Length: 117
Length: 117
Length: 147
Length: 147
Ligand SMILES: Nc1ncnc2c1ncn2[C@@H]1O[C@H](COP(=O)(O)OP(=O)(O)O)[C@@H](O)[C@H]1O
Ligand SMILES: Nc1ncnc2c1ncn2[C@@H]1O[C@H](COP(=O)(O)OP(=O)(O)O)[C@@H](O)[C@H]1O
Image 1: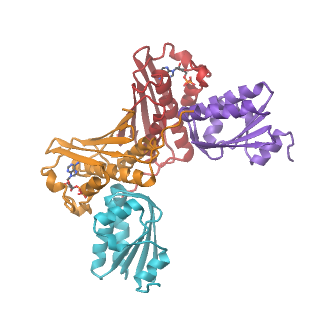
Image 2 (image 1 turned 120 degrees about the vertical axis):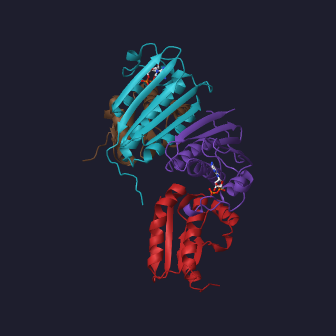
Image 3 (image 1 turned 60 degrees about the vertical axis):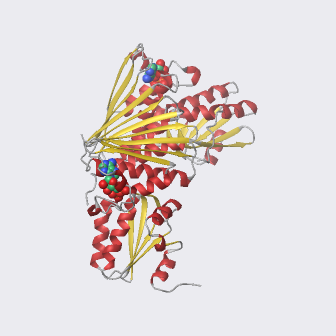
């Protein structure tokens, strides 16, 4: 699998995941992502799952692990555009309230506390 | 796998193959294609392989079988845009001279004996 | 029995995707919906990952077996390892229980498997191994075309 | 030995794509080029189709086994059936020879396998079965990243 990370004003990271996320792939990308988080002034991660074709519970571990790293700075997490199956997995795991559907721009506004409508 | 068949003036059929063509799939589509050939005034088949992702020697059997059906009317065959691997397979099988790269419009002009350049 | 396959492989994490690909191809014959297929793949991925990670500590030697049978619109699967086994299956199956928190395992594997499968059994014996069996019925079944 | 898998399935033609999918996933670990991968898939497809069609007459009962081993950048495969076997292997391997012309078999299977594989052996005994073994070296190999 692949991922892309975009920074917005140094405090928000948008991470786009592609392909299939399992234990093997989570192990490969975890430390790289973790490094970026711990370096900057990051307080928000937006996980864009729109192009992720598959995820098992390793995705829960990956996201919870980064939430823990952000908790020192009282950071926030947004899980953007999960598939139906991923939605169920996040629900079982108590992460339902972090999910949202929309564009990355919507998610960034949401993270900055500017909610439309 | 899927295929589409377009008729041009009742004498030329363009058959577009999609997906993976193996023994199983060849068996599924053979009789349908064959029926169309035997019904009309067909004298040319253009096999467009551009969107075919995989083909083994079952493809040779399928194409040779239809060539045989066309031979009664002295028909012709064009194998359009095979992949590198398919090119080798057609070469081994003595079908190299039927291959061409180009658009369907090129192939139709070629079949009608109107060659550009 | 309409179809049957068995896949075995050594315990390295790269083979998680191998198992998913094989099972995807096996299930494809039933023309599942996207959601049915992805739930099915998730169950297999959880069980296979557990065999590799927990059963064998990813030792690259232990053998994982995935056996699948199709009967009409029901597919039954058994994922088996001869690894270290589970001492207390009931406890292992509780949500959030994990023995590998340091690897960022969430402890949600069994919960997800149970939710997505029509029925799921876990048999395990310490130092002998573990077998997870489950089945799932596919509703949007187009019968294979015979032409 | 860096990785190893065995896939077995019953002799129905739908399983030709199952075998290709599994082998594609196994080979993907070596990051092959498109051409390397498609030649490899073709060899497997020819050998597996032969086992199903010629070995077992697609009886839905006979078992086909595909065994693959990765050693560095070389993958070795054995495709085995316990079917009707080949009386004269030399003749069977000649281009255009086929015993199922009525099924539109082209008789090019073995020629294609030999051309695409680095080496290919066929062992067969009438009423016992057939094993086709081959290997192929992959040149554009990225080693798996450890991060
Ligand atoms: N195949 C297995 N072999 C040995 N132990 C296992 C196996 N499968 C599961 N377990 C045990 O059950 C626990 C819970 O599994 P699971 O719910 O999938 O969560 P996780 O994999 O995230 O730890 C594991 O942490 C492990 O201790
Ligand atoms: N696994 C097998 N079991 C029995 N006979 C086989 C097997 N594989 C090949 N053969 C025989 O060898 C012949 C040539 O095989 P091949 O070159 O692949 O051509 P084709 O499959 O198109 O007939 C077949 O027609 C068949 O008679």
